[in-house]
Image 1 (cartoon, rainbow, N blue to C red):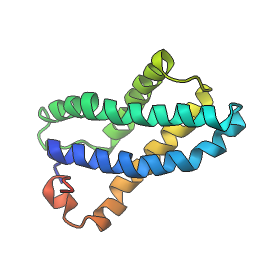
Image 2 (image 1 turned 180 degrees about the vertical axis):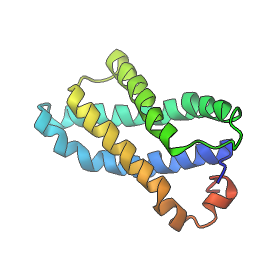
Image 3 (image 1 turned 120 degrees about the vertical axis):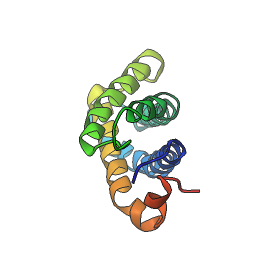
Image 4 (image 1 turned 60 degrees about the horizontal axis):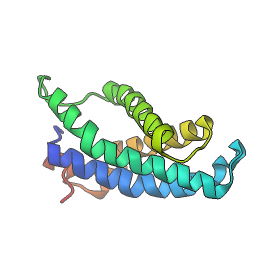
Length: 142
């Protein structure tokens, strides 16, 4: 599948907006082992989730789409996704430190990368089953 720009946006919205949010709501109580209260952790994890969603839609997707235009296949190899997670994680971290609620870095790392892994696995597996024509339509859901 060669994703179109609108397909990438729709896939990110669904995967991070639905699966990522559900995972954030589930994992946040487990992060209390890092110290803060559950209320503070929910504020921090939901802020990080929203920052990742908005930065992904308005910053990263246009950049990734532009970079893909230089590739012969116009596709984004799986190895690039791993590198992409590092840059996205760093940007979300800096935004959270600058304007977001305070929480330990360890809680952020566990939340962000477990969410990233769940979303990645969703895109690589269940999305192809739930939305049968998804990969044939350039990643578009609608």
